Length: 215
Figure 1 (tube, one colour):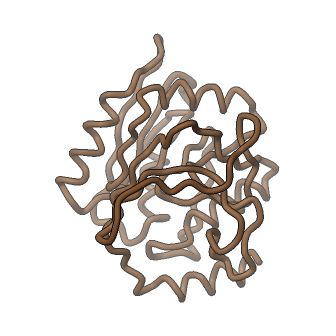
Figure 2: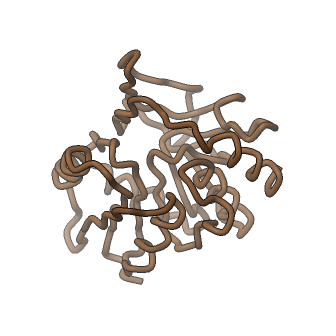
């Protein structure tokens, strides 16, 4: 693993989304001696499968898995990432998550922490959950619109073959291996998620898989 390399990974099927996301990544401040690159996966059968393929193609120690419709606004994002991962006990962080997972497997159905800017077909604005005291809050699961890691663990493509619950699953897999999963304290949101309309065709089936496996 190259400890001076950062890899941004996204599954994509939309050129405009991809190019805008990469534009914002290219604007980020990179510490001296570090390098950053982007890996995109087209035609993935599901998010976990696409992420596994990209993960194995990069020797970067630090990997940021993000949706193609996420814009990283905080130009010092990489500096923050290195600060958080200076603690080897932290395996992954996200922008929003649940300190305790709801029994139905839906992280936002219980108490949540974090911040993001959200743009849907219905409204645009800041989604601010409970405030975080200290540098970060430890959580059971984070939302998958952005997930940053400093260790490589296989994504459970054996279970989650579509586009849902890969994020909660990976959060639980990190915790099973003794790593902490956290959400950092943010004065302002670090990301914009231009999520549009969610495709929920496989959502409920994959939720049942998650509950059966982890809850």
